Each structure stands twice: as C-alpha cells, then as structure tokens.
Length: 509
Image 1: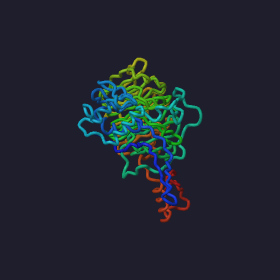
Image 2: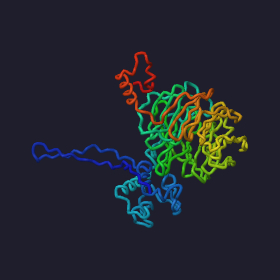
Image 3: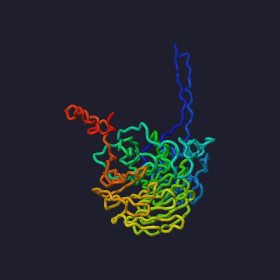
Image 4: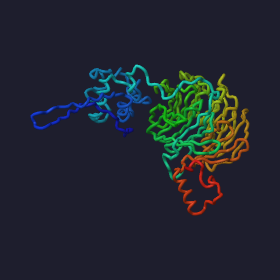
C-alpha cells in the first residue's frame, strides 16, 4: 500500500472576537474580526490525496474493486457495480459517506480502521459543498492556459526566430558523486538546444558551443523521457519514482517555467509525447496502459489497454493524426490520435520494441527493437518497407532528422547514422558501455548520445569527429569559479592564457 506524505491544505474560516477593556470593567465591547471567505474543498486538491493514501491500492483504473475506481474524478462520480456513490450536496444520499464512516457495509477502507476525523471532515465538506472537481468547477469560464496551446497544425518551421531559453538558473538541483545512466536526451526541432535528463533535473545545452544554458528542476524524480513540441516552444518531461509516482510536466522553453502537468500514475512514466497543435498529451509506462489527456484542463480523453507489457515508446505523428505506441513484449500499434481507435497493428519484431520515430512527412514510422533491427513501416497500408540489421545485441534508441536520415544506438555501444534509403552512412567511436539514448541536432549536423555510465558525447555528422562532451550532473558554477581563483592564486593562469582553457564559458560569472 502506498503512503502519501503530503498533508492536504484545508480549513474552515472562523470568526474571532476581540475584547477590549478600557478604563473600568463597566464597559466591554466585543469586536468581531473580519470574516474570511471559506475556501473551496475540491476533489483534486483535498480529497484525492486522501484516497491516494488509503484507497488507490484497491480502487484504481487498473484494479477496480467492485468496478469502482476513485483515482479519477470522472470514474469516482460514475460509481461502481452498485451504482453512484456520491450525491453532490447530499450527505445522507452519498453511500461513500456511509462506507467510510463505517455506518454501512463493507466498511472502508477495507481491513483498516476508520479514517481520522480530520480526513472525514474534509470528505464531508467536499460532498456538502457540491463535490467539486477542482477550484475552477463553479467558475463560469475555465481559466485559460498560461500560453496559447492551440497553434496551427503541421511540421513546418514556425515563423520568427527559434525559441531559446533566457536567463535560466545554472545551479544544479542535485550534485551527485557521479553521473547516472543517461535516461533521456532531446533536441529542439528548430533551435540549437539540447536537453539532457539528470537526477531530479533537466540540463540544457547549446548544441553548437556546448555552453550550459540552464537547469530546470524535476523534483518528482528521474525524467525518463524528454520531448520538444513540434514548434519548439514547449519542452515535455515524463518520469517520476518507481512504484510510487509518474507524471508529465510541460515547460515553456524561453522562461523555463512550468506551464501545466498531467497524469498521476502509480509508477514512473517511461514514454510520453505532446501532439503537433499541443492539445493532447499521451503517456505510458509499467502499468501497460496508454492514457491520453487534454492539455486545456488535464481531463483524460481516452485510454488504450491493448499492450501486454510495460510501454517503452509513445509518439504522435508530426501531423497529429496518428499515435504510435510500443512495449517490451514486441507489441507495436498505431492509433487514431483523437479517438484511440486502432489504425495498424505492426507485427514483425521478435523482441521488445524500445523506441519509435516518425519521419517528418508522417508517412513512415521507424521502430527499434531488442532483436537488433530497425524496421520502417508505411502508413498507407501498415506494411513493412525495410528491415535494417542495425545493432546485433539490440537497438536502444532512434531518431529521424528533418531530411529523412536516421540515427541509432544500441547494446553494442555504437552510434550509427543511416541515409534516407536505410543504408549505413557513418559509425562513431564506441562508448565504454551500452549506448542508451541518441538524437540529431536541429539541423542534423550533429549527433548527441549518452550511455549507461553517464557519458554524453557530441559528434559532427559530416566527418564523425567528436566535438565535445556534456554532463547530466554538472558542477555548480561556484565550484568552477573557485577552481579559477585557486589557479590564479597559484600562478597557474598565465597572463596571455585564454580563460576558456581553464574555465568553462558557462561558469565565468
């Protein structure tokens, strides 16, 4: 059973009086303090954390005891096999209240003592207050998103300058003794911007200079997937903590602030993507279910339960029409993005499918597998167009660039580039350990990849030369500045020696 340590904020407004005694006790005057407005008690902010701690283990969308799931507002209000259990505004007609107060059978939570009085009071006030979903439930209009989410469709380069981060902090959230396995890398589609997953953080670099541009916190745990929106204006991170929490967070690239988040999985999110007009987010992971959410209000639009093993890959087509999903048992499907209806069942891999990538015209899907192959699939009829024996011990990651070339890496520790016909074009020097993640830069001129022991390299695509290394565990700027000061005091820094030979440009503050 999971425990939720965060105590929900709630309370009822109270009126306090003040008694002023002046001169003698013959005159007393009670002065009532100004009454504060009573806050809304909502499912999302107050009730759901209680259910998560006490009820989710038996009543969730994967395991719905008596056909009742309480981990989403819609399923809770729908009720279970016995019908609806919450009647907004009417405590006596809400069977949920009778069960959790142990006035009726079966007493809930099953096999546990009655909930503490403080938590019962929260649920009571929630029902009496109309069983609101969230703080916006009674508002005449929904709060608009922080930025415009509804852009024109298409995978073409947007007008105006490419979006780059500005003024982001460069102080690490976590400074670990050593870097961990590289769980995710991503490249902006139109800007020289790379994102690398670290421990509770996302590290941003300039793909041409290697300069550290900023660090974004991801306090929920480890990011296992990083994506940029098709316009490059948003950055998506999915992850969490194993067997505890999974979610997807979306950031505005330029200021770096969080725009919204969706999902509250009971395990880490391993795969996620945002569609081309930024209206939908799809996610999946160990629970074997793909869930699709609306970005406007976070509501779940549909869920796909076809997979039989943990989901490794989720990606919308560039035109937003289709959604590809893949799992550890070799399952690979394409769905209609808006409805979740099956479009193609792509059969052919003999091992787990580890990654997928769409060609920019949305007509071809590439899939990578533990069977060592990369397969190209045509979307007109779902037929296999080509099978590439890419990495004999298994392919771990693939990425299309705008011109149709493909880059891949695998358990053989090698990174390779393939031309538009699927022929091997370049092989880079091998890593010391399994290569896990790979991506093209925005212009296809560089390749970035990371391995199991945390090494991240950048190569020139044209000549195959390594041009730099990155870190998911960068040192604090103050540490690098102290190195500079120590070297200066020791006389190591010569008068005519360039500063960049000793001190990285991103830490000269």
